[in-house]
Length: 196
Image (cartoon, helix red, strand yellow):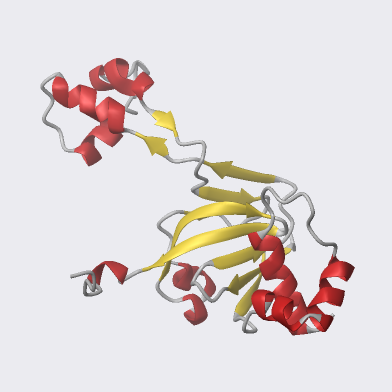
């Protein structure tokens, strides 16, 4: 398998990993890729920039920057933790209806506070913590055994180097060979609007 065929295969498996019953095998894909120009054009990707990372247990992971700015993270995820973001909207809305005036960021901390001595929840925690829940449709943290621990808000450039500079982790999607790291540009919010 050539590098271009491998990259096209990764692209194909990432984009067809969910809900496809008639997915091609590797050999079927390569046969079609080398004989059908339209198919090859559809799945070809520019040979991407990637880095290899070795964790503390000696396992290797590759991070491939895709054309859309997202990153394909591949490796061994047999023993892995992952997490979901908390949703505070309903709890905070109820808190405000009850007359609370704390800023939401302070509320997010307070709703999880316990007394260091008695281990009893704070008054706000007691009243509103059951209204906080996890968004089970969004993965915001992945931590394979031995690392690396990646979470939303992380600047991949600081972790993976210059090739991934200013790509910020938004969330993760399960892919056949690992995870697709959904990212956004660190300075995207500063771009001029063109929808006027």
